[in-house]
Length: 240
Length: 248
Image 1: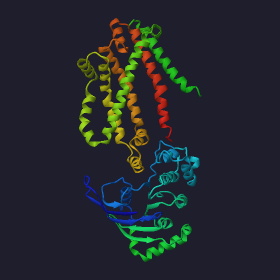
Image 2: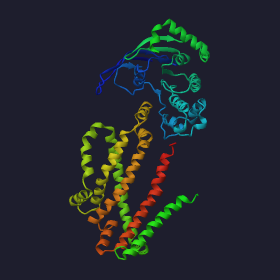
Image 3: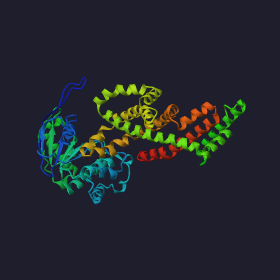
Image 4: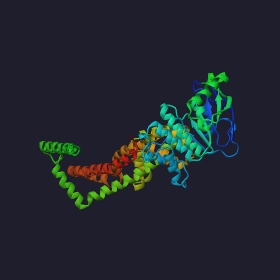
């Protein structure tokens, strides 16, 4: 899947001047590839995801060619419907004919079977995030977008959700675009790292993560690669 | 102390009746009959079938005009809340209709359409509609954009978005419009009936006024208040509870 956004500008509103959000962004996404977008906050990552999700149509560029891809989107906030139970929230995004076993399996994989009839306001943030991840996986997307889905979780919870996410993803790999500004997290998850400049956004550098999938929980290996990156490419230091 | 919730309201009601009785004794005039007299008149009116008939007619008008006003008002309110241009255009209309006195609408409806049932219903609807529109419009403006984006991104149909994303957020506003609406509508309906109908509570009250029959006026009032309270407890409260069950 080819993605090429040539430019995206926000029109002037009130006293705010015209703002260029994306100057140039090109990415080739292979099937089943997990790509992490790393860049400073406010660099236009969420803008990019909203364009890819079809929420923002005011841009210059091209996505995928032909039919718009089916999207799963894990927003920065879980964005669950508070008046629908966990299970209803997931079922709502599915086609009517989807068998119940699909949802059962996903709930089980994310260890949420026991709370499936609970309303989201009674869940912890970590649990809500897991529900949002299930919802995105459940539609079996061509492209899965994740916008800092682990931000404001405490470290052990973030690790737990990350591990569950990896298990789920390895069962059924999708193309994933995962936005983060945590380089360690990106190295632990990604096949490919894309470093982005400050606004207006351009691609600074694209790198492949050489660590084997089964070694990603090894924090020493992740940290060693991170140090190596910072040494080899001093230009990425300013982005983090 | 489990019986407390029932005992306090009962006591306050008894106190009100006692106060009424006390004043009636003090004044000792047929313009303020005692509670017992009113109860007897009420009983006779029920047994004779007069009160059930007129109350039924009024309630039917209430149900019809209320339903029409709520449905139209919700639809228009949602549209105006979602479209800035339409809202900018129609805002003045709303302000004007909000401020036209109920009596004027009623008279004009009767003058233009004649003393017919549809004119009566229309007059009530026109009086209530702007209130519903304004309330629902405010609710629509306050809709959560994040959730709407989520619905769009996951390809929710219009109907699905309305039912699962928009409606639950509008529910408190619609309930507010319902409560204030019922209170407003039934007062207007009485005036509509008084001016141009030959049945219903308003017509009866007018009759009793000409006869100076205060006991009957009070008896009909009691009946109406009881019916509205039963509606509140039996319909609105359970509706509220079921819609709020997701709250912590």
